Image (cartoon, rainbow, N blue to C red; front, side, top):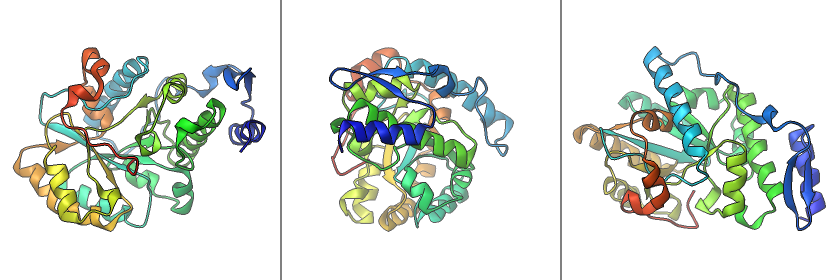
Length: 290
């Protein structure tokens, strides 16, 4: 798709937002005030949240804004406490209801990085996901963002962000690049949108056609405080692995919480963020994941 076509797509997606482009396709910025794309001063929160969870998420929002300003990806939280974050990409999908049921029955929470085209295919799921955790932006069509222009990257992220808000009433402040692939331009767009880029400590390997037993072993090896685990809610083997993994959390006295909750109670230090994945122990990455 040519640059002119991508800018046309952006105008279609973002309504009144148009971009001024410098030579070479560099984005100068929206012609209207960028403040209009920021989150509300008081983020919209689902009414089902308990008072404690609401307080934690508000504290997490402040931490997320502080970390997002660094313009660097996050691979883990701190290593204190007894909490970690199970995260699920690419949904909603045919197995989402099963993942939600298992998490709810086990008293565990998670974060769902949702894709716009999947939201349209499975309407009505975002409020249900909010009841057991938090939502994040995973783009509208799940492309490799690093090969796109900044205008196209902006369109992919913003189109998904606006759709999530429309379907859930929630402005998200978390973003995960598809396949875990990013460059300076992608991080710059995320920072401009006040989004914190989230990677992972451990890839479950569930997108690589692994058996549920292998998925379970991959995740078990990384179950420790502050870990961020990558999984996918639209795979049957992942759901089967959850059946084995959730009791393991209980036996190890660990709890999966949403990322805003984890970052509220056990955020990474600035030094950890600057060290990147090296500060988080084992990290398994794959171009087939995320």
